[in-house]
Image: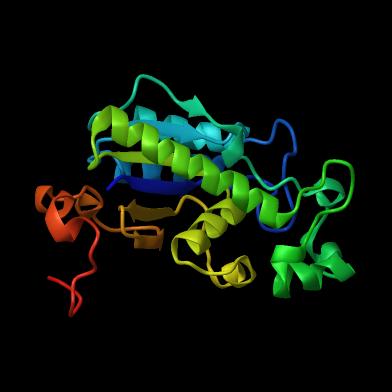
Length: 235
């Protein structure tokens, strides 16, 4: 019953108008640093069995604020980097304005049929391939965290918007072609609780409020409650 917290990185100077992708050396701007500190403070009460990050600077900086939050509950000794949580490799689209990309024929494929979208250029990646690597990473980390810290452990992964959307789509049993219906704001928290029966989407695109419910209650890790959905919605 491992709980995964997916944290999107804070804002950069390119977030929004430009497709940043794997642009080297791109860190958080002043707004993003403030967002990272805020999400670190929000998650301070939650004990984390592991803190994992995309290798890109904007995620590492956000994860660093989560690790360094004042008065934080238990934290791992360091941040573990997993390239499988890195941004989609947008190839030749990297660094181009979104307004310009919206005129490309591939844009409509990305919007309406993303499972078929493969980004141009020698470094371009398909969205389906990006989802596959990210979901494989989640499965591997779920097993590792549960084995090392027990089935009620919580861990956090700092990653990117399209990666979060792809993992959520998988958890909900949605075809990748539906993932554009999901949204993940900068510095948002999305929580997925994985059980032997099914994943539960606990929170999506959460940007405020208390976080105590992100830690499973002892009774939730045992018996039918560990994997069965409560009839009637539960208490």
